[in-house]
Amino acid sequence: MGRVNEVMQRALASSVPLIPELGTHLMVAGGKRLRPMLTLAASHMCGAPLEDAAQLAACVEFIHAATLLHDDVIDESLLRRGRPTANAVWGNKASVLVGDFLFARAFELMVAQGSLEVLALLSATSVRLSEGEVLQLSMTGDLSVTRQGCVDIMSAKTAPLFEAATGVAGILAGVDTVQKQGLLTYGRALGVCFQIIDDILDYQGGDASFGKAVGGDLLERKVTLPVVLAYEKGSTSEQQFWRDVYDAGADQKEHLPKVLSLLSKYNAFDEAHRIAKGYGQEALGALSVFQDSPAKAALEETVHFSLLRQN
Amino acid sequence: MGRVNEVMQRALASSVPLIPELGTHLMVAGGKRLRPMLTLAASHMCGAPLEDAAQLAACVEFIHAATLLHDDVIDESLLRRGRPTANAVWGNKASVLVGDFLFARAFELMVAQGSLEVLALLSATSVRLSEGEVLQLSMTGDLSVTRQGCVDIMSAKTAPLFEAATGVAGILAGVDTVQKQGLLTYGRALGVCFQIIDDILDYQGGDASFGKAVGGDLLERKVTLPVVLAYEKGSTSEQQFWRDVYDAGADQKEHLPKVLSLLSKYNAFDEAHRIAKGYGQEALGALSVFQDSPAKAALEETVHFSLLRQN
Image 1 (tube, chains in turn green, orange):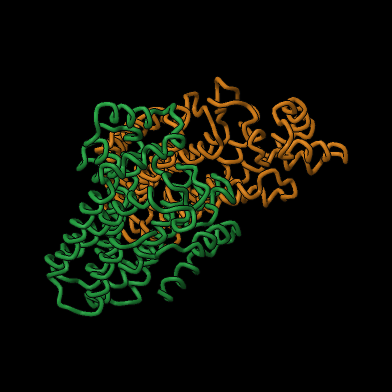
Image 2 (cartoon, each protein chain N blue to C red):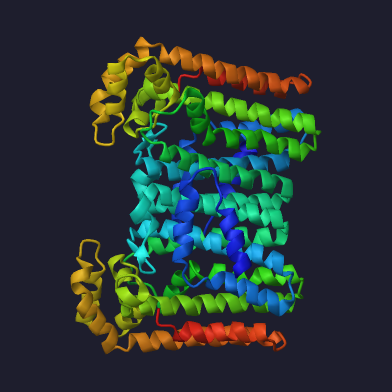
């Protein structure tokens, strides 16, 4: 990871000072660095060249960072990981543009690495990420979504980059089709699992532990899995309450206590966690085509970590 | 160009309806389609395979469209080419995300075409475009810029994509280094020329002819070449006026009449036009390494058109 950080630091260089300034703010805030670690662990497991893996891990993290910058503009978020967001400090304009810079720079790094197969995977991934975000945007406040539809939408913005993060390792190592598929399945299933836990924690974490306000998804009228599960089981009057809450004109914040009590009444968090665990199992199963190794154990550990994490 | 439109139309397809909807709005609004035409004309001139040229012309236009979407969000523009902007119709969120989609799709199309040299040129170009935009943003309201600095800043967001639009043709055709350089120089000089004329027309066009309000750059506190030229020659009190006008707290609109009269008093438009003409000459000169042909004549004509255009 030290090498990945070096690559990212160097790739943030620009004659325009605001770019490294804003980029460093984002990188220092850091977060879990989960995606580049997945690329490195999967590369270790498959025996891919590690310098190439570090380059591509940095690309994956840059694409992730670009989507975070644009997300925070879109959601008008003021806090991320307990620190002020870039848009809160430098404004929306700078966040949109530096997001564009990071995205373009990621492609420049990929081209330097030189694999058209990697470029194909990561450009297709970027298309899917933006489609996932637009899909989520068009479904704002829509309670008619099924639980499977909800999982699909919420994961569309997350799972593709997890899938690509492990998928590139298989390309670098030149593994066979079965193992390539195993890496993609592992990443996708882990991504869905991760996103469901995120959606649970959005209602459980506090400012201190999660670095953002409780119920952020509610305020943005994002209908996530716990809500769909409670809505499904709700009485007629409770369903009417949910529809009122997600109305564009409603004051969502005011309704947070009742929202939390309904989620709890119908065990929506436990049920969502059970669904996440199913995806976690799928991720673990996908690794069965690889021999045991410390790197494989690290990928397995990541699944358990994702299910147990509290922030 | 019919083929380019087909490629673009197909590439806008998505399972998320908002994407083709917003994309088509943008494409129907159309504009000059100058960049893809440059790619096609340069490809004709060099004997590049035309199907590949059409694919890459579409990529160039998609990158351009993505930057327009993000620009309009950043500038909070309500009109472009006489029609409501996408952000005015669908909101800023959709515009940011569909911009991201177009950018990612452009890279997907390039990967399908398969030239790493093209990918290198267009990814480096995308980095430079975003740097140019951030640079312009950091120089908002700054009257200390020199005339050369001003040309550099204003062109940083425009010239690289013109340069790449003609540059890719040379790569596709496999021309020698001298001709490759000629294509890049032509594109870059034409891009600077085009941007200067844009900056002049911003103060001269009206709602009807230019599709946006007169003095838009003034309202956004963008210091463009005509203003720098008038500021340079202004008296002490006029320079103070300019500094007051570009102050963040000032009501720029109110000062538009005096701004226009000062620009006229110091022949700022004629002088800027003379500078643009110099870049036009440079562009024409760069074509001297190519034999005469109808395609070359079209590229020459584009320079004259850029200098004479009224919108």
